Amino acid sequence: MERDYDVIIVGGGGAGMSAAITAADAHARVLLVDADKKLGGSTALSGGVYYAAGTAQQRARGYLNDSADALFEYYMTLNQYRVEASLARRLCDGAADGLAWLTDLGVEFRPEDLYASGVESVPRGHAALGNGAAIAAALEREVSRRAIDVALNTRVSGLVTAADGRVCGIRSGETTVTAGAVVVTTGGFGANPYLLHQHYPDAAATGDWAWYIGSSHCQGDGLSLGAAVGADIVGHNRGLLLTTPNFHRQLEVFVPGWLVYVNREGRRFVKETAEYAVMSGVVQAQTGGSCFALFDDAAKHAARPMAKYADAFAAGVLPLNWVTSELEAQERTGKVIRADTLDALAVRCGIRPGALEATVARYNADCEAGQDSMFFKAAEDLKPVLTPPFYAVEVRAAIICLTSTGLRIDRDAQVLDPRDHPIRGLFAGGETAGGVLGERYVGGGNSIANAIVFGRIAGTSAAAESRRND
Image 1 (cartoon, rainbow, N blue to C red):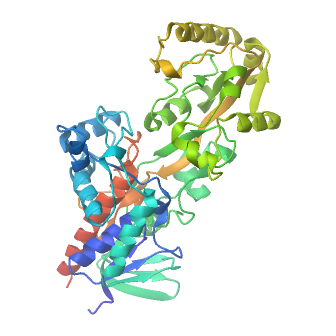
Image 2 (image 1 turned 30 degrees about the horizontal axis):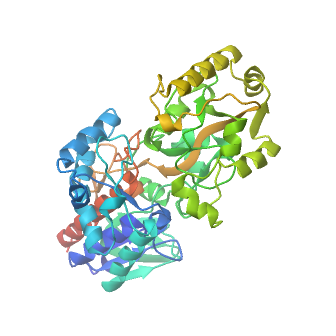
Image 3 (image 1 turned 180 degrees about the vertical axis):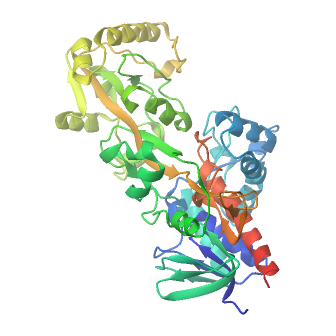
């Protein structure tokens, strides 16, 4: 039967554009559809960090022994083996090649910008010059260089199936377009409150604190499209939340080391400068699902932008939470809680008073000694809590960075049903695919690497499926 295209890609973010380019390079006739008025999706809005091991950038910095094997062991251990091992293996094996592919497309990942973006022993976070917008621009440029048809402002309402159950096209309103295979890369569902309640209750539980950093078009369309044709959905209640004091809706990934985090029992429970890859889970595990950031009057008046944010803050393009002017403004709103004594502060916050005083006493002694005896925070970050009045700010893990619930896939990005049978003609990648990203985000760039690696795999697999259906 004659069809309109060989491969249709639904969703034009990093995963979707990677799939489209790869399918076109495999000689497929490709249609790329996106609900937005432009391509790029959440990739274009991201920091542009890509997580990989065994890369040229690492070798240039002298890290000669990192490998996909080491990354896989780290990935599985951090997630306590509660991710699909075959998918994690495919991601780890393909990450370095995906980075090299982006580099060949013109994205610049400088060795000097390599950093430890998780809790790994070697740096694996590769920061793109120009952030995620540079990655999206390079991919869009490659899409335009190929004979790929692009349909923007087009929301797909359903998948078309043949009599044998094979997916063979899409519907958008009254229009049907046929294909040999369909790839669903619509991103996550961080902008859909209903699906958050259904699939990511930890995020939904933060109420009006919660906000999503990605595209407003991440409505979970891929979940509903896949479910309608029998796809299994996996990864319940998984995603990445970042901590926030709820001052304003501005992403501030790193917090200053002079803050002291205490729980409602009045105890420190984490190194305050711990990587965000693990911080959200630790904060969520505390009583009430939140903690308090403690500091004194001297710290408040000395609060300045961290070096990495200083230029943007000075230019007025980046508001920050932990600076004197903002803390004073939020004190007037009541979000910064003030008291003349630690006991009084504890009562106002609902913290056990005696324990808080003991915790601060030990912390101050550590500051004087120049060594954090509990969590080994760097000496330069140790600032005593001595000068009244004292302050506390409630902190929750409530910034939704990504959602990890998605369609079950195999290592070739083929979508599976609940019995692990392949749904012929249907593939998925990026946030739309479940089972790749686990309970713990392994490090900054995990999501972008997942999008590129499985986007390329899905494009290759879909093109091959289309040829089989000729």
